[in-house]
Length: 173
Image 1: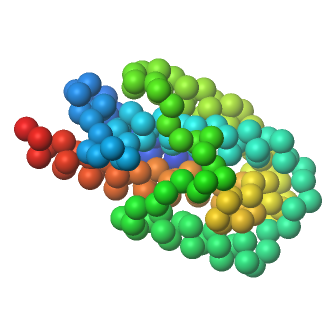
Image 2: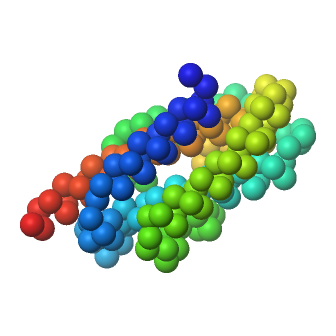
C-alpha cells in the first residue's frame, strides 16, 4: 500500500473513532497543559498543512538529504512510534492547536489539505531521491517519502495520546 493510502486510512480511522465520541469527551482536557481530542486533531491538521506549504515552496530545491538527516529522521520516527510524550519544538509554534471546537470543521479542513496533497503527490514523490523538500526542526532534511512517513508516525504518536485521553475521561465518570 502506498504511503499516501496509509495516511488516508489512518486519518479516516481516527475521524471515525472520534465521530463516536460525545462532545464533552472530545473537548475534555486531562490537565491545564494537555490537549483535548479536538485540539489534537487540529494540531495534526495544522502540522500537515504547514509542512506541505513548505514542501510546495521547496519543490525543485537542491537540498541534499545526508546520512545525518536520515539518522535524525529515523530517530524522530522511532520516538513517535513509542508512547513517549513529545513537545512541539519551539520553532514550530505555528502548529499548536487553535480554537476550533467542532470535529466536522476540523475534518473538512484536514480533507482540504489532503485533497491538495493528492493532486500533487505523484509529482512530489517523483522528485529525485535524496533531495530534501522539507527540513524538520529535529529530523533535518526529508524527501517526500520521509515526509509521508512522518505524517504516518505522527498520527500513530497521537493515537497513543488518544488512548490516554480516553482512559482519563473514563475515570471522570
